[in-house]
Amino acid sequence: MTTRLRTARERREQIQQNADALGIDDAYVSTLVETFYGRIRADDRINHIFANQIGEDWEPHLAKMKDFWASVAFNAGRYSGKPVPKHQALRETRPEHFEVWLSLFEQTLNDTAPTPEAVPYLMERAERIASSLQMAMFGVPGLPDSRW
Ligand code: HEM
Image (cartoon, rainbow, N blue to C red; front, side):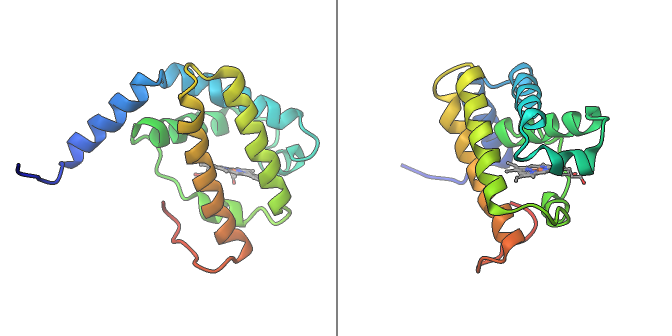
């Protein structure tokens, strides 16, 4: 048996097929982002951080977050920002806010996911990114660089 490294294109196609099989597509990402940030905006434990930064016009943020989640979930390649410095600038954010963020995200997945398997698929990715952001923000050893 011969083994060979998969090309970037093959890897991308595999990721897209995996997400597709879980029912994760642009329509679902849009539902996820709209529902999740609706809940963020309604939650007094965390909404002030977003209100201070985003203000009233949420459309640009929602559009960016849909591109971000499409890139995380099925490698859409539509997001190319730098989340670490953006979050480092949110001086009032504490680890407790990440607990709130993650619990709202998990509840949103449980309420909206197109398949049961989509919940851990997206939750694992959110948790990984949240850990990475927290390491950069709160000075835990082993700082990652600003991309993951
Ligand atoms: C306590 C937790 C969090 C808070 C309070 C928070 C808050 C914010 C705020 C206020 C912005 C807008 C920043 C700006 O436009 O200047 C933002 C952007 C963003 N957030 Fe978060 N966030 C949190 C956690 C997360 C997590 C866990 C993820 C990913 C799983 C995430 C992904 C992003 C991305 C991709 C952006 C866009 C950055 C860019 O402008 O390119 N955030 N966040």
